[in-house]
Image (cartoon, rainbow, N blue to C red; front, side, top):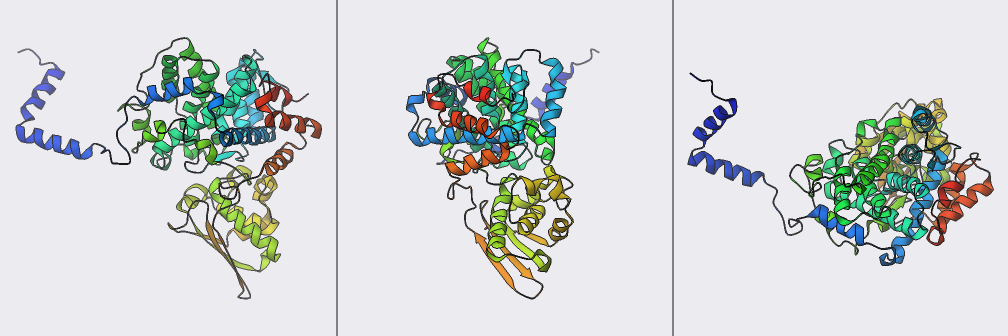
Length: 489
């Protein structure tokens, strides 16, 4: 008797089982399991093509003034933290490891003398810009939108000259696409463990670089698809160098996708929206209107914020409260009995490290952040250093910090009560943390932040020249003036 083919056997079994009743039950279950389009979220077709068409046709002259201003502010902020992070161990290790494989000096390493090929330069500068955890943040999604877009564009601008206006237009497009991708899948995507900055940002980076490369619509579709095939970053990496690796790799992967697409390396035309495409694979929630709704009318760039503290964004309300209380009351930390906090659920989920061993880990510890701020009255680089993480006074106080999750507390809020040994109490409720959209960082604050983090890396005159080039990016004939002015000499 011939041996039945396994596929035929399976087909026969399925056919036998497929009675009218079972088929009806299967249809009902499938209908129940299928995502339902509500009034707010109608189904959207051709998401990838629609987004690609917008990117290809979007021009600098179409940008509203407030959007341009936030694009420039994003550039100033990111350049400062990238120069500031350029000498740290993560960057030194990456530069040393990759130097033997990067003989082409196409692009600058910010704050350093080396030059590398554009993909390795984008990666290393991306690491430098994120390693301090001091970069910009789109609070709706916790995407750091400049972290991968700007280093990729800076590297490409040294390889192929572009005007400052074209450069800024690409920056804003990259930010827009990154944040819209994040909106479409947040919070489910983030909650399961993806580092959304890298997974959404790689697509925004491909869009931005592809724009400078003048990809046509079909090529842009392919660039978005090739980027979607390279999601990078897991939240388990937080507190290690690997966290900064994620946006760095997203920067180089975005360039990689655009370069291949320019050579007509194909991808699916529905890579973002297909059943087995990006959004469905990386998240249980998909809102495609967040990607293509009101393109050219609603800009996520105006919601970008700039960190006043070099740590996880969810720590900022607690730092704000602790610093205000310390400065107003000259608190003696040895007299504190307890520090009770009511916080958003993300605070303990993201920053619940009770015993951080070094500066990188301390950036993800609410216990450390509050203790350091109460003792030193600040929340800057010094408070998130190896020195501070091992300071006996800070270690002693962090055991008295008692955070409690309260679903009513928003991400930019905290309710803090300090109880002293003599029975006195101090209370502070932060409605909107400093640095939020409601309490924004000023242009002067951004300059002071730049000067602070870059101090000791460049002479002050060179720092001021880099800052000036960033502010006047729209008038630059060659955007490469920005990275070349930020090289060590």
